[in-house]
Image: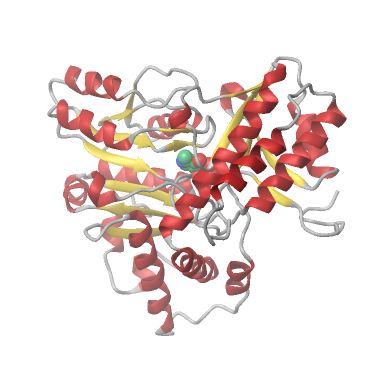
Length: 405
Ligand code: PLP
């Protein structure tokens, strides 16, 4: 088998993984350009467009943004290494595979990660956060590192409640938030929330390929980082405080990805962030209505047990033991031209994930749901009939305005 989309298929293969997500034509076109030489003054304009776009979508007028030629793991490492020295403690409230991966990363670079108890299918419990901070009488925990949407469990946690828990515990820990899979999909505002650092990446709601990670850093977090004697080299954002792009990026900047990011922001702002959030919420409701219908036969169920915490970016579906999820994915991808993601971590092989994230509309989602139904028939998976109709009803009921969905 060759890589990529060969042999050619008629039409398009729909990509419903929660990152990388479908890339709009405008973004692909923008990237399809020759890079500029490092002395070209237009590079500064490109960087400014990306930094300003990020600040707007992150909801900050106060924080500084640092971009890395990196994926989300790189941005995780940047935040962790800047804010904590080896041996320092951080609280990572458990919310699924991605909070756990952050623990693994922190421990690999010798930071001390403390977890809250994990309850599968549930968002972060703010009471557990408060308790853990109250128990830390010596205030050794430097920061709470919260994943907004755990992309594996399809669960979104209440960040305002986590902020309130830190305040209620009267603990000086910083609040660091991973919005990797919620940015550009769910409403978020760094300044209003009182987050000190925000972490994101290009390949999800920002509709670009993987390769640009970023951190937004407020003055308090920056002061903590400045005192840290072990910030590393590449990730150290102090080194990036410069007007010279070669310094800012610690070397060559990923120009073509930035061309794409600039174009993606133009699309997001032309649509309007409120409309973008409304579109995501609606498509998520449609998908989740379909899955609830499928679940009536008992073979499938929504992983997230709390309806209000179900992500607007991705829906995670548990499959009864004995269902060959990989066969379902293969049939859906190879025969019906729709690809979606498998479950991760402890859930691997026990479920799948349908993303409704980024550059998606109602027709794409309905096509995706119909393809999954077709593949379930092929694979002999029992499911409640009528899921696509349920999704149609949700979409039809809400399209009362001229807003294209
Ligand atoms: N955080 C969250 C919530 C994610 O979903 C992911 C990846 O899916 C990451 C971090 C890591 O990002 P990357 O795969 O770009 O390293």
